[in-house]
Length: 207
Image (cartoon, rainbow, N blue to C red; front, top):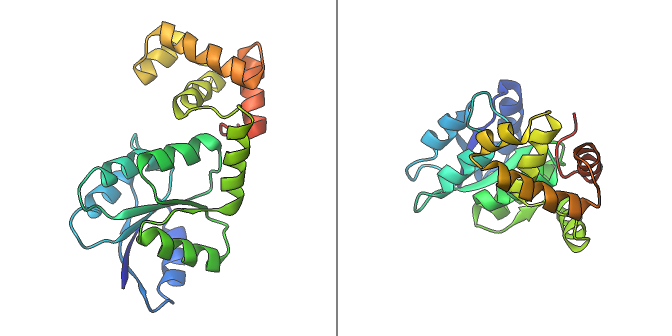
């Protein structure tokens, strides 16, 4: 029996996922979390085998950070990210945080069930389309690091280098260095062009 924890701030979404998962004889939902902090707390101990984790939550702690905290504990449950966001930065951030897989909420039920079973035993369960896109962006030399994506996402919000530095605990010089690397990778010469190109590539969230 695979024991599951659902972490999503939308009750209707949790109910729908629970109904689908509990129709399977080998899957059992043992808990639900409406916040990232609750997900971290409920994932402690040995009662959970796999956490289905959304990325966006109310509050300061988001899904990737919750995943990192959960996976930092010895013997922790695996984490499968189940979200609406499919940017390179989101995917990379989740995988680097220790997620065993990454799936979009509109995935067919059989794909989700297969991913749950694979992730529960530590196999990578990355949606095929996402995997091929990451491989393509990496081979093209355009793929931004998680930190570069964080910097550029703040640029897209209109933040200054100083504000970005304060938010990410970086010096202004380091922020400028990241921007130089971003411009080079994306083949652009301005902040506006970098944001537009990154959104076009799916490297940062649009809008």
